[in-house]
Amino acid sequence: MRRHMKVRLLAIGAVVFGAGAILGAAELVEKVVVRVNDRLITNSELQRRIVAASHAPGASTDVNTIKKEVLGDLIKEKLLEERARELSAGASDEEVESAVERVKRQYNLATDAEFDAALQTSNMTREDLRKQVRQTIIIQKVIGRDVTSKLEVSDDMLRLEYERQKEKLYRVPESARVYEIVLNFAPNDPAAQQRAVAQIEEVRTKLSGGAPFADLAKEYSQGNAKTRGGDLGMVSKGELLPALDAAVFSDPPQEYPPPAIVPGSIHLFHVGERKPGGYKPFADVSDDLKKRISENLYDKRFNEYVEKLRRDAYIKIYDPELEHLLAEKKS
Image 1 (tube, rainbow, N blue to C red):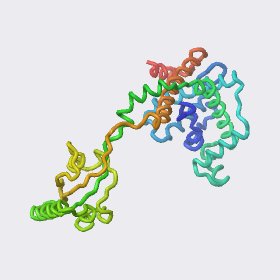
Image 2 (image 1 turned 180 degrees about the horizontal axis):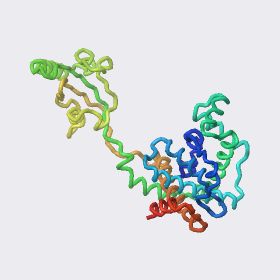
Image 3 (image 1 turned 45 degrees about the vertical axis):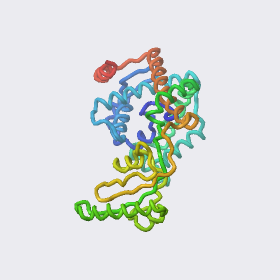
Image 4 (image 1 turned 180 degrees about the vertical axis):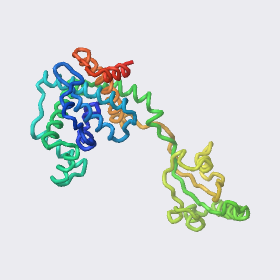
């Protein structure tokens, strides 16, 4: 599953190491701005998350946008915490320590001193981090139980999505084994181009006389594949420059198409084995299809799940500005 939870607030690393100074005014620390059932969102908690979100990669530069997103995420978090309490969901010390180690590795904190310094920058202690990590693990378990475990992707869904997406995602172009003799010339020198054309005609005459293409490539070609007898390997339609592509994949197909000229070079091709275009087999892409469908289905189911929790909850916003921001979001 691409995500265990679609809420930005649970990016523990961003909260821990992306935040700057936290509000210093003591009288604001316990100011309650939102109540979600029996859980409270304080102004200091909200401001801390806003600072972290503003430092996240790709963050919006609009303060109100960040506030709306952070407040919405905090409300989701409180709703999920309530659900966790109902389910008696918990996290073991081993799970917490393992997650903390992952955070340290993610931020390349090799020593305890580096770890403590990073925490201190955000006015946090190790115990603060463990508390946040424990909370995240518990909420992920709730989502795993109530959302992820109930996602069902049937074979019929996969096959339908395959038919819908195969042209866009799984098309395999026509391809051919291509050998090349290329002669270079100065683009703005017509006489040099004519000499190259004459030399290619000399090569074609030798081909008609039975000379192997590979031997002629080693003798005449100025391309990178010269030492391989001009062998470019399997080439897909659309991979070469348009003029060269048209020569290789001519209609009707030709083993030795006419030379193709592009600015600065002339190309003579030998087209060997051809493979028709088509689509990757369903069996080869079923795992990718399942992943794509599961991600889209997860987003839909998770949003529906959170909306149900919200409808069943008592949510009171005490700050008029925040109430106005959320009202704008809903509208």
